[in-house]
Structure formats: C-alpha cells, structure tokens
Image 1 (cartoon, helix red, strand yellow):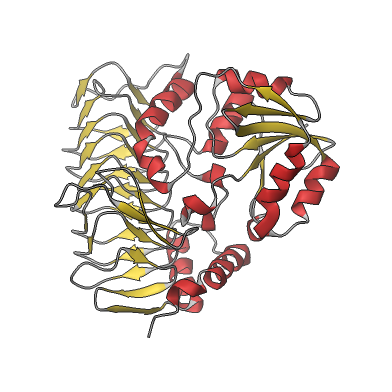
Image 2 (cartoon, one colour):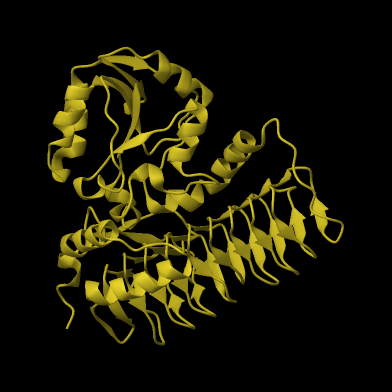
Length: 407
C-alpha cells in the first residue's frame, strides 16, 4: 500500500507552491508531509504538478491511499483513513480528506496535464462512496497567511507529537528558563539566553544554537542545525526552519529551511521560503497606519484580495533576496528568484524573477539567478543540479505575464 499526498489549494498558496508540493510547506515545527509520516509511521510520496514530479516522485502500488496535502493529521483522521476501502473517500464538511484508489487510476491522473490534475482527482472521487469524518475540526492551509496565522496551533500539536514519552536534554545553568514546556534535542548549544514557555512551548532541534543574550517567548521552534544570532528577540508563534539563521526582532513568522534573516531589523507576521536572504536592517511593515485589513496578492485571481487580517507582513518565495535597509509594506508578496534593493518601498507584488526596487524592475534572467543559487548551495554543501534548474525554468515560463510591464 502507498500513501500519496495530493495538492489542494496549490494556486492560492503561491508563490510557495511554485517550487514544492503543498505538503512540503513547513507548518509549525514539521512540514505537513513529516506530520503524516509520523502519524502513519510510514513514508509518503506525492501527486503534484508534472514539472515537480521528478524531484517529488510518486510511489504507486496496486492499493493507494490519497491524502489531502493541505490538511494536518490527527488521531481520528488517521484511524478513519486507515479503515477506508477501495472506492471510498473520507469527507469533512465537503472537504475531501482522503480516498483509496487503484494504481491504474493514479497513473491516469499522472498522465493528465498540470492544469487539470486537481480536477481529475476530484472527478475520479465523484463516483466514490462518501464516509463522513467524525473529527471535531480540521487544520488546513488555504492561503499563505494561514502559515503564520495558524502557526501557534501547529507548533503546539507538533511539540506534543515530537516530545511525547521523551526526555529533554539539559540547557545548562547559565540560562533563564520559564515554564515547563521546553524541549532541547541532542547537540543544542545555548547559554546566557531567556526562554519563556508560559505562553507556549519552546522546541530546540538537533544541533541548533541559541547565542548569548537571546530572548524567546513561545510558541517557538528552532529546527535542526538552525542558529539564533546574538541578542535576538523572538515573539511566538515563530518557526526558524532547518539550517536557517535568524536575528533581530521577529514576531509570529515562519522562516523555511536554508534561509537567513541574520541581522537587526523587524519581521512580523511573515513567511519566508527556502534559500532566501534578508539584508541587514530590513524591516517588514505588518500593520497599516489606518489599522485596516491587509490585502494580499492572489496569483489565481491575478489581483489583491482581502486577507481578513489586521496584522500581515511579507511573503517571500524561494531563492529571493533583498539588500540592506529594504522596507517592505504590509502584505507584500515576493515571487521566486527575485532580487530587491534600493531605498523606498517597492511595489506590494514583486513578480518572480524580478531585479530592482522602488525605482523600477527589470527581468532577472534565469542564468544569472542560477549562478547565485550555485554559490549559495555550495556554502551549505549542497548541489544545485539540473532538476532544480528545470523547476525554476518552468517557474520563469509560467510567471512571464507578471513581468510584461518591465522595461
């Protein structure tokens, strides 16, 4: 039997889903994929966009369980999905949670175009018998701002999942620890820091480091090999992804793996993709002077839409960078492989493969972007291979319309 995580809400979660399946977004301490694998105690694979399948392959067997990759698991959902029979689907309030289908049906969906893959999944499920879930509620990502807005809830649930039945390593005596929900993995370096878990759990992943003078208020997750720089000020709920570096003042944000916001400057209510770099003294506005709800760019609708949130900061896709003293307005969306610099506030939607700032933008050609990516990967002992290039070239092609007004 194979467990396949399929994409839902992919378009509304752009730009983060340009370069990964929905279930590979970090949400809390873990990605949604990692959550399901821990609950199921089995590996999963993906049913995603055609151009992503090479990097994120599908493992197909005679019996396959499709799982909605935008939904977090719980004990009830896992039990209900495990009991499904072939030709049955699990539903909660008209949301498809999972289904059991044959390998032939999976291959037919895979053979379709990216444009109709999600449609084919739901058309295939139309003829299935519905089983209604008895779970009390589902935790689902629909929009980029859900990633930070619901991050506290997911950190708490992930903390319980990861630490249950385990004993934390000791932090040492030269620290101030408040509350009982502090878990320290093996290899953590921490001294002269203040950790407050009275407002939510604090999790420090394997081989992570909290430098001197840092002050952390939970819920907070510092993932494996991540570093919190000197005198950092962190308000939860915040996640610093694996191999990332963070510093300055951060509030209710998610920084994905291999990204850096290592210097002073404020970041609030924001989501940063992988392989990004935030220049020193960069600031993200997360509240309008009018205190009005923030509008956020929606790729699917090709326009700004209300978020329903008063606090909303920056969304930055993979491989994007900004120079020192960059200022981002509330609800700014930066696509994949953008490079922003210069004084003043740049536009609130910065298309993928853009180069410039408030003074104007030009196209950031893929070859130039790849040269930077190769150097960045090399610094982390990673290889920037042809598969990565093919994904980014495809992103460049499908986002061409957003750069049509560049000089």
